[in-house]
Image 1 (cartoon, rainbow, N blue to C red):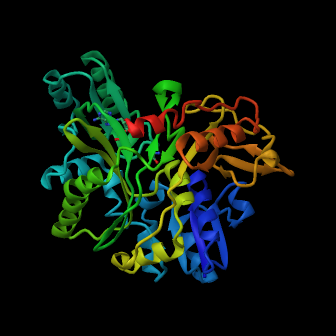
Image 2 (spheres, rainbow, N blue to C red; image 1 turned 180 degrees about the vertical axis):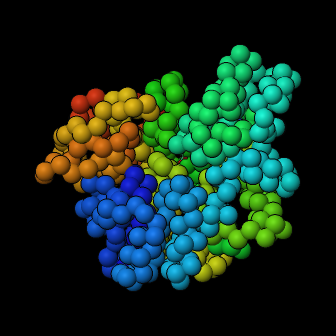
Image 3 (cartoon, protein in one colour; image 1 turned 135 degrees about the vertical axis):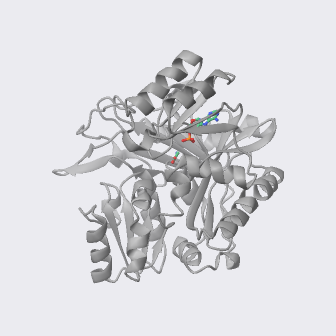
Amino acid sequence: MKILVIGGGGREHALVWKLRQSPRAEEIFCAPGNAGTGTLARNLAITDHEALAEFAFEENIGLTVVGPDNALAGGIVDLFQGKGLRIFGPARSAARFEWSKIFAKDFMKRHEIPTAAFGHFSASEEAHRFCQGMRYPVVLKADGLAFGKGVVIAENSDAAAKSIYRMMDRGQFGEAGRGIVIEEFLQGTECSLHALLDGRNFLLLPGAQDYKQVFDGGLGPNTGGMGAFSPSPLLTAEMEERVRREILEPFMAGIRAEGITYQGVLYPGLMMTPAGPKVLEFNSRFGDPETQVLLPRLRTDLVDLLEAAIDGKLDQCNPEWSEMAAVCVVIASAGYPGPCETGREIFGLDKVDPDILVFHAGTALRGGSVVSAGGRVLGITALGADFEAARRRAYQAVSQIQFEGAHYRTDIAAGVDKWKSA
Ligand code: AMP
Ligand code: GLY
């Protein structure tokens, strides 16, 4: 079977790498891909959805896998399905759980899914009024997709008022910030949960945890994710049962009642609070870098799993996962998550031990060299018998790779083994 992967980040390199292992994968294409996907797949310089559907049709692509949220929000799944093409991912109307936070919050309220108390607003005067009655900090969120930058934690009423002004009156996020959600700040530890949905059934993947802030110790602005590990010690068997009962089952019942068909990944970002797990947001795609620690632990054929999701047969799947710990450390460009320096030659990739996974994110080929081409440049994943072993191996490889301005966190997965036995 010919397979097409849409996207060009670390998540897509991990998807291509895993799909490549399937005996069913004849040829893989990745659009637009990066220097890493180019070693396993044929990169396509196509981003237009119509042109991609045309390509898939002409090339007889048997399975398309969508990585990024904006492609889903742009209706790529609807377009492919309209041409009779098989594609993994939710239709635009189902991906709304990610592209409209207002829709997602109202849905959670209707179906009693635990989440932070909130209000949502389309007029700034009402938003200001609501903030007067809140306990600080409060969290302000642009309704739409804002490249991961649409969430602000305001420590006091001044900061909240400024954010409301920027988002709603100054149009900081354009259309995406026309409506906003204002919610209670939740204390706890975050956990990324991924489930595959096939329209009827859900299948939980193991837990993962992401490091959002750019600097060690959780300092600095939020990023797409500076590193991750899996499994998550927070998701014990008991907690998993609770998450199924309190979050996934009401979600499935809710979409059934509202006539929403959801096929693809549902990735709820959870806050584990003293009162139990609460949903921070729903994503309608694989997380990045989470995918870079989940897929290396998967023993089952990914083509079979994704096809089962498309065919409504997830109830027949029982994927196997390695017991090993996986740790991914992201190496980013100088300036990330702000404007970054790119085009820097990357050295040392050839020195890395072959059983370390070097997933490329923002990379490109220039002449015969690999150069940086984005904010997050590489994700280095290692497996180990415990987190400390995986972490040591990942950082050993990180130290062998250099480019001008490269930076990474040094505390990814630090202390997790102790935390597990605590
Ligand atoms: P979101 O895109 O909604 O997941 O928000 C991005 C990040 O902001 C989350 O991963 C959390 O770190 C933080 N965040 C969002 N909502 C809340 C909340 N209600 N309380 C505390 N932190 C939050
Ligand atoms: N790592 C967070 C995300 O993919 O949204």
